[in-house]
Image (tube, rainbow, N blue to C red; front, side):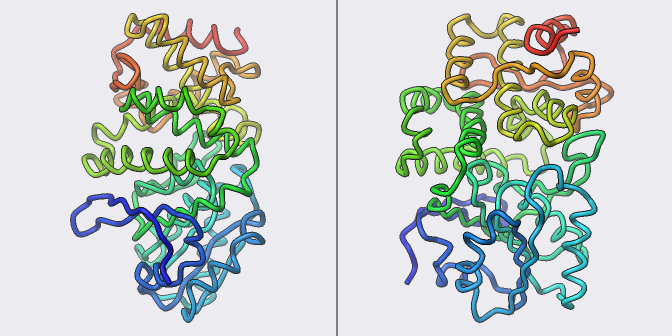
Length: 364
């Protein structure tokens, strides 16, 4: 019997796909029967998630032939070498072009499994089954796949849309508090770039979210996915509006790459990055004192960092200059004209950028 769930759609014409949000979806064989047409399925997970949920997913996918490959857990392993391991399993088990790859895990697993699916036999189907809040609200939706390079975050990758996203909210009950907080950073992003009322809702529900209250989490997953699905449908390949989803990320990715992808969780770096972007917006005369204070206060209340104690401005600038959003040699930033209104620009005062970094990092 199918479980009760909500369904959103990422509208991409004949490549449109559903996002299912609900409880116990990992055990919903009826939904997986409908969503996964392939008879041969590779499940990609990691050593942390698999002991909790792999058995349930394998049962839901029966009677398909399923093979599972387990990756080490952590952003440190988001590399071409690890993707090569996934490809080796596909080849060794003689998977054809009609197979499917199912990603069971957080954003790192989803990005690597999706990239392997994008390049194996020039592209095979894949399904996202995200088990972290960050993946359920952000990385599992939109088709961005790839790996990191020592020179920069996500520099190697491809756009490859999933056939479906299945977000089982019961998996959040086993999420470590630090991972939950990291996911909330991406939730805050959606309020800041597109929905001031949602940002205000987050301000009034911060404590229930941190406590993992299921109804509150279900609400933020749904609203975040609604916003992202609408933006991706308008600009799938990030030629324009989709770049707004990078609010805080140009700074955040620089933090991650500068610290070796191990010290900061992605959401933690995005939290500090959003404070930097908001501070830059305020210094540019675009945000009021009160708006900047609200943004910093909420990020602090959610237990996320608001400054960078261990990286200098020069190092951050060096990593920002090789970000994917650099165009014609100019670092593009996503700034705010107010809470709920964001824009992309390369027209800003470089001195304000440096002073922002100096004020929120280790200094020179």
